[in-house]
Amino acid sequence: MYRLEQETSADRWEVEALYDTCFAPGREALSSYRLREAVPPVARLCLVARDPDGILAGAIRFWPVRVGRAEALLLGPVAVHPTRQGEGLGGLLMREGMKRAEEDRWPRIMLVGDEPYYRRFGFVKLEGVEMPPPTNPDRVLGIGHWAGVTGKVTRWTR
Image 1 (cartoon, rainbow, N blue to C red):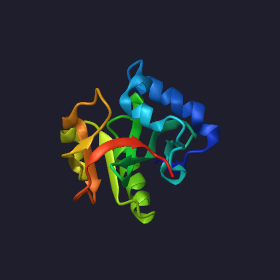
Image 2 (cartoon, rainbow, N blue to C red; image 1 turned 120 degrees about the vertical axis):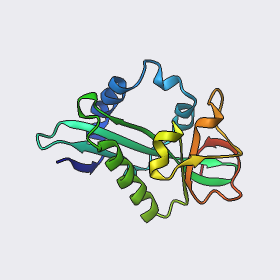
Image 3 (cartoon, one colour; image 1 turned 120 degrees about the horizontal axis):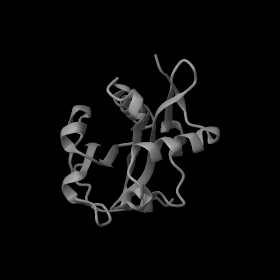
Image 4 (cartoon, rainbow, N blue to C red; image 1 turned 90 degrees about the vertical axis):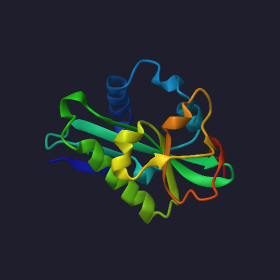
């Protein structure tokens, strides 16, 4: 059984180490990281999953972005330690984070990923939403209220 908790500043380096373990070197060179620079994540939606011994097994983060003039959340990264994959933990983190986003009235969520995997959570390919290059447009997915929302994805500003 896993315990889901809101990520705190005390979790930061442990979560970063998990992301380093799960993703290729140079992950921070991806265009999605340019959208996160100098922008804090949405704290209530950033979760860690710990086993009964308190060992970090997974983590998820959400970031505010703009799509054209509309507000959206950029989901990611989400990661599960390789020794814990296949137990449904990634899905648990996704569902809980998305539930909290809905409770907080975020109208839409997007991510960059494989549509066949994320389809199970309701994500579909977004048309007319432009992530910074070199993002493959076929991997730009969304869920929520996207009717009429198009344009470039840019860093969050108030």
